[in-house]
Image 1: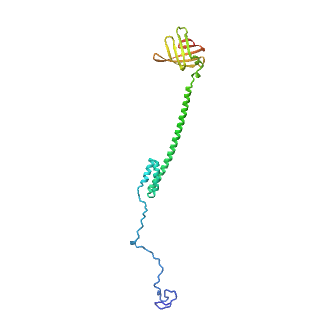
Image 2 (image 1 turned 135 degrees about the horizontal axis):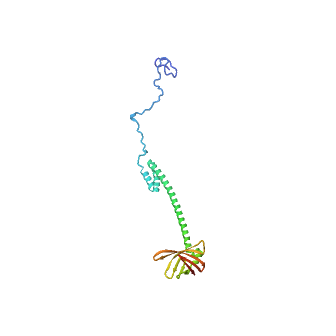
Image 3 (image 1 turned 90 degrees about the vertical axis):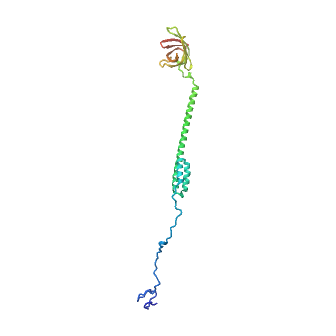
Length: 248
């Protein structure tokens, strides 16, 4: 192989002549990395993503939230629907979650209040039943009430009709102490009817303080007397300043 410029002999593989420096392989080029530059006036348009979310008003979410405060079951249902529809509108999803949470809390609060009301109702009902039982017991005792059972000995002796003579006097009296604390009294001139109450004298079981209440010329008045047993059929009644000797 010889140089194409000076004719000097070249070795196999030599590209440049050692004598004149001539390039004997002009068609061979160095490996170069070319940067591919797209002309600015011929740029490819950026593809448009048709899935970009639109900025829409979350109507469903708003309705769900309002329904939560008006009627929580509707708010719960609409909240779940808003969450499902949230793929298309992020606002619906957020408001749907809020509505669902609030509706769930409302449901729990409803359960608590309902349980308290039921418990309170049962308590009140039990109290009413208990008081009704006590009332029935009182009525039964009243129906079966035996007045004589609670009388003192002196009150039992007093029961009945007494004929009395006034000491150092001429007028005689009659007293009739009846059941149910009714009494009749007469001195031959006046007849009196009313109620009486006798209380045993704790210092002497044979004595009783007697309070008699009656109408006197349309005026309600009272008289205090003392009953003293001598025997079961003899007694003295002290009425104001008079001492009456009485027999049954």
